Amino acid sequence: MTTVSVGSVTTKGQVTLPKEARDALGIHAGDKVIFDLKGDQIMVRKVRGESILTLIDRMGDLKEDSLSFQRRLRREWTHRGA
Image (cartoon, rainbow, N blue to C red; front, side, top):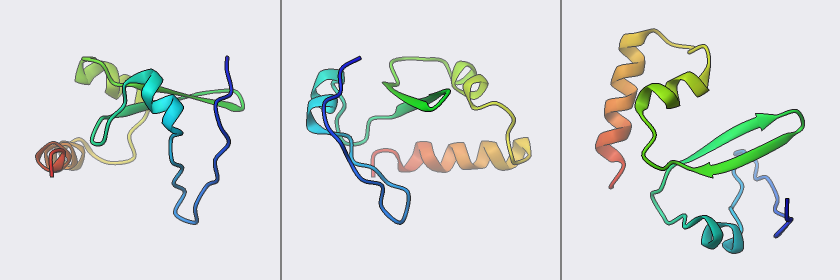
């Protein structure tokens, strides 16, 4: 693993991905990324054609009922290009 930069977490919990990392992974504005938690590390990967079922499986137990989840997915899908 290569460390490319150090960032700070904002009060809203946001972190900017370093340019070196975005360039290396081909991440651009509007792209989706996956955060995998492994012990005390977070791995960031670009979403590359993974099925929705694979992404849902990664999320584990949902904190909302299926209808609310579907509605949220539709809103996110509709606003992804906005």
